[in-house]
Amino acid sequence: MVQSLVLCLVIVEMPDAGNAALVPAILDRVRQLAATRINEDVSPIWFADTLAMATPVSVLAGNGFQELLRVAGSAQLLLAFQGVLTRGTITVAPHALANRFVGGPGLDEVQDVIAADTRPCIELTPSAADFAHAHVRGPKAPRTQGDSLLVVDDRGVALVNYLATAPLVAGAGQSVEAVVEDHRDHVAYGLGATFGDDLAWGRYEWAAGYHNAWCAEQGLLELALPAVPTTHDFTFLT
Image 1 (cartoon, one colour):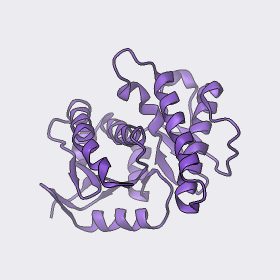
Image 2: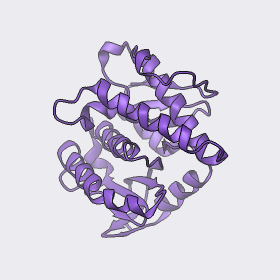
Image 3: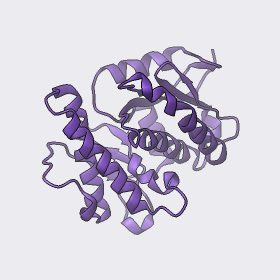
Image 4: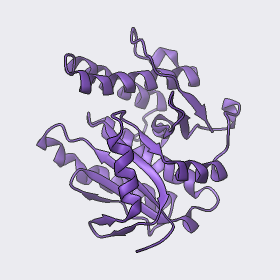
């Protein structure tokens, strides 16, 4: 058993078998980001409906943990563009990761967290939140000091602020605003397509509330979803 690793586990919902075709391209993109922004030895793997990424905490010294948040958020945003809402967890715990096998206490912990709720987000466990406190800046600084990689929801749980990765996932010549518009349009489509299915619609309603909160935080209200009231509160951190 390998000790003291950060396990980033993203559970991906596959609405239909056709979505399996998008996995290779997205996995390649996430692997490239992980190699260039964290460490070339960090290689995300895909098994069943799960994306897993692990690295020793020693690799995350300096800004490494912030980069791990960016890579995880990029995967979440790329999948959202394909109409796939993700739910996952980042933890600091003993675990093993080899080829397509993931096991150990770290996996048990993230599976418990994922199963406990349905919000389409990547949560930080208490151990990961403590690690983040030591490696990511605290309460929101002036907006000019940089992007916000963490957001705290109305439960007091820290989440990956995946829209902050828009500059990373933007295509050649594509603006951040265009990326955010794409996200808005996919969420709006999902709200309409799942109307009448309380569980599925609730996930898109949460995503809409997060989207609008992010737009308000960034002063981009023109990119918000209109006429979508939300019961969720978000506090952005840097």
